[in-house]
Every structure is written in structure tokens, then in C-alpha cells.
Amino acid sequence: MQPITRTHLDMKFCSFLLGIILASFLLSCDRDFEAPPLTEPVYTGADANITIARLKQLYATVSNPALIDVDYTIRATVTGNDISGNIYKQLYLQDETGGINIGVDQNSIFTEYRVGQEVFVNLKGLYMISYGGQLQIGYGQTNANRIPWEVFSFYTHKNGWPKAENAQPRTITLDQVNESMVNTLIKLENVYFPDGGKLPFSESDATTNRTLKDGAGRSIIVRNSNYASFAADMLPKGGGTVIAILSKFRTDWQLYLRTVDDCQNFGQPIPEEGGEIPPNPGHTIYYSETFGTADVSARPSIADYNGWDNKSVKYSDASGSVSVRTTKTFNTPHLWFPASKDGYLTIGDINTSAGAGEKLALHYELTANLYDEGSQMNLNAMAVTVDGKEMPVPDKVVSKANNDNNKVYTITLTDIPAKEGLKVEFHAKASLNTCGLRLDNISITTASDEAIVIKPKS
Image 1 (tube, rainbow, N blue to C red):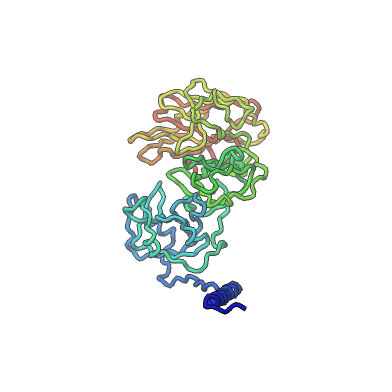
Image 2 (image 1 turned 90 degrees about the vertical axis):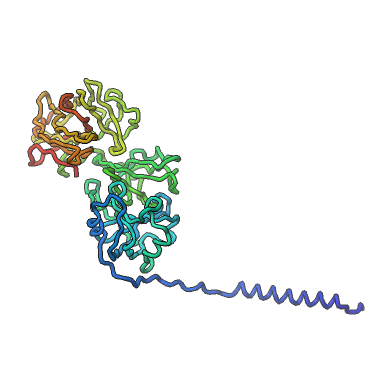
């Protein structure tokens, strides 16, 4: 037997110690540790004393950032955040009276402020900002007037856990869109992307506008960031439902998707296309032309354009001066009649015979390009002839001074024949069209009891 040495004892002790350590580790792995309890946020500050609608009303004339120097507090629910990257450094808030966005100089705001989170915002010390003609809450003299995160956290308080059911969209149709809905969450059913399955949500190098349409030919911009998580995804095919934040930039109505899941139930049949809804919904549509959604970046003439909604009728322009265009303000194709030139749109072989025995009306949208100060003109510069009969287009003087630049007017003319081979001609007269005219959304429908009318498009 070998003698026991100090070295042997040291080795045994180390083995014993190691065993204790391993046993402790294994026991610790089996032990259940409870996570520290989370405390539900509870707001204990001043009660809400102003609604979003009233706030926007009080600051309606703001042009430069305006300091809010009254102890106002709003109570609202988060309806949109930056979870997908399509909304950038903003939160959308909504109460029972309306919606507003709040600019915050912070990324990944969604980790703190989820959709359905109720918040109280103490407004005194913040600013009302006007951007693109719409009001938002921000901060003066900062980058893009966004509120620094520390300041935002001081003024904004969560109340309770976020509940997605608190952020329910309002179901509407495109003809119901109005100013009271700006920055609110809406749902549009039975709509489709004309470029579904053909184009991605966004081009890779820039924020991109895509068109969403309904079966009546009405359309709206869907604005997609190239940084959105779904930017490279293809637009869905077929008909479906879109939930989105309704926004407006100057005169353009726009939708912001919060995530790609806001496009729901696509793949259904595309809604039956019938052109622009007439001024009185429910009336039968016998002809309509919205000028389609084809690429018009080259500004084709009427003779060169092939994107018409109707392939069975004939379109021509004896002058050769009229072109099909889009602009930043009018993002879908329309006809441009240049100033001080004769311009024509002649439409032949329209079939309205199915309306025999009915009173029919012709509707069209007309917009004057009143860019220069002091400019004005009469919209009856666009003459209309139906089957050789010149129609009595009403007088309507529009002017830059009256804020009519790019304002869309719907004109309705009655006593339209029900027949095969109907011919309609629009003629912008060089001597009267001093500013330039845009023509869009032509339809022939059953008539209402109204006489000849001209009114701003709602």
C-alpha cells in the first residue's frame, strides 16, 4: 500500500469541492424562480380637459410651430406606431372625436407604446405643428419638429395595459372620406390594387405611392416606405380589405399601413368596375371613364394612350394638344388641356341604350390650374357637345384669390340621350382656357331631380 501524501489529500478535497459545486448548479437549474412582478401603469395626473377635435379647431390657423401655453390634457388611444417601419418616428392617437399624430425623435417607439395603449398627454409646453396642411403635435426648433424622447416621456403617460380591441377601425367607403377622419384608423372593404401581383409595395430606393381602388373607380394613395419590413413584398392580388391610418398631404388623401397584416382577405374577385360613383349613389351607371392606372410618365397624347377603362369606345383629339398626365397633387391619370390652346376629347360609340325610358345625366370633374397670383377663369371654358348639341354648361368663375387652385369641381349636365353610338365631345376653347384645365372621371348615369349643377367635389 502506498502512503497517503498531501498531494493525494489535496486532490480528494478538490474533487469533493467540485462535486458540491456541480450539485449546487444542478439543483439551481431545477429551482423555479419567479420573474419580478410587472406593475400596470396607472395615470394619476390631471384629467383630460380637451378633445382632439377641439384642439385642432383652436389651432386651425397655425402656420409656424405654436407653443401650447394652456394646461390642456388629452386622453387618447394609440392606433398606429412604427412597428413595421412604414410609420417613421410618429405615433397616431385617436379619441372619440378624431385623430392626430405626434412626432417623436426616437426609433422603435412601438416597444413602449403599442396599438391599443391608452395615454394621457399633458400638452402645455409642447407645440402644434402644421405639415402638409394638417396639424400634429410636436416640438419647436428641433429636427423635423419632433419631440425629444426625454421630453415626450415627461409629457406622455400610459394608463393601463394596451388592449388591441381599444383601437378598432371605422368601416367606410371612399366616397365618405372627409376632413374629420384625418389621422384616424379606417377600414375599406371590397377594394383592390390594380398592380396586385405585379409590383412590390415600395420601390427599393424611395417611398412609393401605390393606388388602391374600389369597384366604383374611386382611388386613393397607399404610401409605403422603402424601409418598411414589407416593402419588397408584392402587392396582394384580387379584392380584399385594407385597414390603415387615413392621412392627407395638401390635397392628397393617403393611407398608411401599420403592418402588412393590415391587408386582409385578399384573393377575392376584384370588385366589378363601373367608374366613378355619380353624385347620387345608387343610380345606374351606363358609361364611365377614370383614365385607368397605366404609366403616363411620358405624358402620352390621346392618340398614343392605351390605358382607357373602356376598350369598346373611340377616343380622339383633333388638336393633338391634350395629354394624359399625373402630378403630385393628382396621382392617377387624367387629361391635361394646356392654356391658350384648343384641346379636344371626343368619345365615340358610347352605348347608353340600356337607359331607354330613363332621364340620363353626364358627370365630369374639372380642375383649373390657377398657379399664378391673380389668375382666374370660368370653368365653362370647357364646352361640351353631345350628339352635335352644345350643352348649356353653367358659369363658375374660379380664382387663385378664392383658393380654387387645384380644387376639383363636379359638373352635371342633364338631357343625355339613351342610344347606341352616342358621341360626347369636350372642347377647351383657346380664348377662354387661360390657365389650363384638368379633366377626370367622366360618367353617364340615371339623372337625379337636380337641374344642371356644378359643385366642389366632396
